[in-house]
Length: 258
Image (cartoon, rainbow, N blue to C red; front, side, top):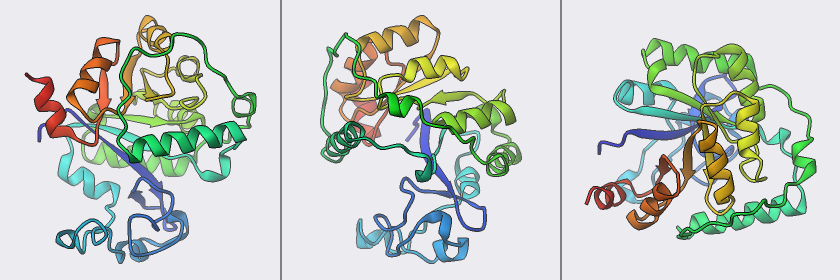
C-alpha cells in the first residue's frame, strides 16, 4: 500500500523466539489461551489467528519477528514496540480509569479533533516512582541480531517504556528510540529527554498542546497513536504531529494526498 512505516509489537515466547502480537495473551486473537511467555513456539504456531475475523482468514498464524522481516525488510520503516512485561506495571484507580477510557475510544475508533487542552494534566506519582527493572538484554540482543541479519538497522526504531529504553540505550545506543514511558501519565516528553530518545509517541486523548510544543522545541519527532480519518490526521499534522499511526491506512493516505 506504500505506507512509509509499519508498527508491530513484540513478545518473547517460552523458547525465547520473538512473537508479533499486540496482546500479552493469545486469548483474544487466536483459538488458544495463555500468556505468550508461557507458550512454546510450536504451541503458538499451532493456533489459528484468523478465523475470528473472517472464514477467509482461517489458518493465519501469529508470525515470528523474522517472518515479518523476511517480507518487509528495507521496504518500509519499522516502528518496533517492545512490550513491557505485565509484572512491572503499577496500577492505581486513576490509571485503570485512563486505560479503560483509552480502550473504549480505541475500540470505537473515536475521533478526537483538536484543539487540545493547553494545561498540565494530573501526573500520578506512584507511576513515576515505580522501580524499573531493565528489559532482558538477551531478548533485546535477539531483536538487534534479527535487524542486522536482514540489513535493516537503518529502517527501524525501538518504541517502549522505561525498562526497554534503559536496555536499548545500553545495548544498541545507535538504534533510534521512541518514548512511551509516561504516555498515559502526561510525562512522556520529560522521559523522552531523560532516555535520550529521538521520538515520542503520544496517545490520543492523553496529550496536551503544551506537550506537543515542548517535544518539538526539543527536536523530538512526534508520533500520534492514532487517527483513522483524513480529517483527523490532517488536524494533528497541523498542530505539530509528524507521524500518525492508523488502523485505516488507505483512506487516510488518499484523503491526505488530495
